[in-house]
Amino acid sequence: MAPTTARLRMRDCDAALGSSRHRFSLAKSAWKDCNDATSHRIRPSCISVLGHVVDFTVIVCTYNRSRNLRSCLAALAAQQGVEGLDWEVLVVDNNSTDDTPKTVEKLSRELPIKVRYVRETQ
Image: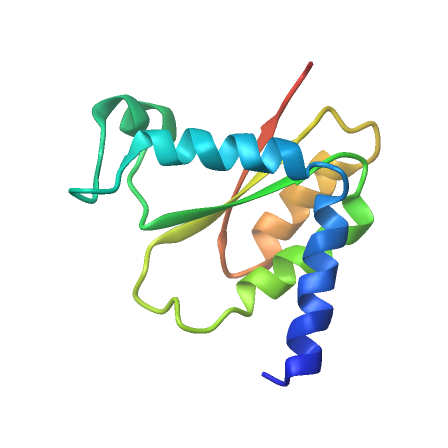
């Protein structure tokens, strides 16, 4: 991938994250708390929340940015070096009022990656 293309894709993801960086940081911290880094095992409490064990989860937090989700998720789907790993994208919708839920549902059918959706109501 050309460096310019990689930068453009990263910019798309940054735009999709919007002002949710703090929430992303909180979600990342919560995930780290669940993951036992010393033994690379997931605690039982995390397995019950996730429903299954994956190698890693990419968390995309969004609020009224459905127009940016396609490019962000497509950029994630195009990543190289993840062959053989079981991974997923978790879209956390911070109570959007646009068509984010429909967009995520449509993209989860179209893209060759696992996409999960969680809607925050508060």
